[in-house]
Length: 377
Image 1 (cartoon, helix red, strand yellow):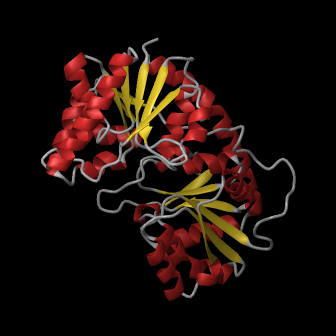
Image 2: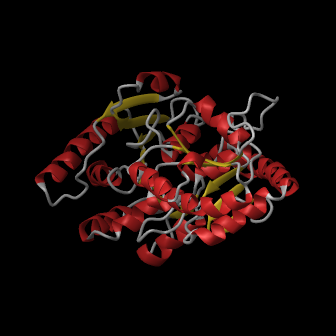
C-alpha cells in the first residue's frame, strides 16, 4: 500500500464534518500507511494520541488563499516546505488534501518537485465559493487538473465538478458516513431533556445556508397547531446574533434554545430525544450544502429527518421513507411539512426505524472505509 500524507486544516478536535470524515476513514487504514499534517490546536494532544497513525501539527490556517499577495504566497511556501520535508523524510507516496484550496496547492508544488501524486476532496460549497474569485477559481482549476483523483462528497457535488469545472476521468464520488455504534437509538428510557415538548433539532454552524432562520420564521405557524413546540439549535457561528434578533422580532424567543457547542454525549442524547431533526438548508448565492453528515447521525439514532431541496442533502435519506425533502426558501412549506409530520406519530416512528436500517446498510464507516481503501490504493 502506498503511504499517504493526509493534509487537512480541519481535523479533530476542530469541529467540522470533513474532519470527522477523515478521522473515521483513515483510522481504519492499515497500520503505518497514513501520516497526518493538520493545524495547530491547544487541545490537539488527546485526539492525536487516540488516532492510530502519526499526527504532525503546523500552521495550516490563513486568511490569504491567493498567491498574488506576499502574505498569501508566503503562507503557501511555508506549507509547501513542511509538506516537502515530511514526504521526503517519511517516504510518502501520495498526498491526500482535505480541500482543493488551500491544501491542494502545496501538494501540487510537491508533485512538481518530487513527482508525488495527490488527491483532493471536494465538499460542494468550497468549489462554488471559489467561482466568486477569479484568482481562487484559477488556482482551483490548476490544482484539480493535475490531481490523480478528485473525490466528490455527493453526486450533487460531482455534477458541479462536471458541469462547471470539466472534470470526468479523475472524478470519484465517495460520501461521508456515520458511526452506527455510537449514533444509535437509546437503549433505555432516560430523563428527557425536553419533557412535554414537541422538539425540532438542528445541528450545524450558524450559517445562512443551514436555514436556522427559516425554521424560526416557520415557528409561528407551527405554534398555532403545536403550542408546545420547541426548537433546539446546536452549534455556533456568525449568524447567532441575527437569529436571536429574528426570534425576538417574531415573538418566538421562548420557543428557541441556542444550545451552543455540546459534548458528544449531550449531542447524542439530543438526537435520540428530539421528535424531528431538521436541516432546512437552501442555496444562498453560491453557498450550498454539499452533503449533510448531521442527517446521517440523526437517522442512525432512529430519528426522522427533514432536509432542504438544495445541494446534496437529499442523498442522505430515502424520501418519504426515512424523512422528507422540502423547499426551504420560504417558511410556509417548511411549517406545513413540520406540522404534517408532528401530527402523525406513527409515521414518525416508522421513518425513524427505516432511517436506522438505511444507515446500517449504506453509511457505516466500516463499509465506507473498505471502499475508500480500494479506491484510493
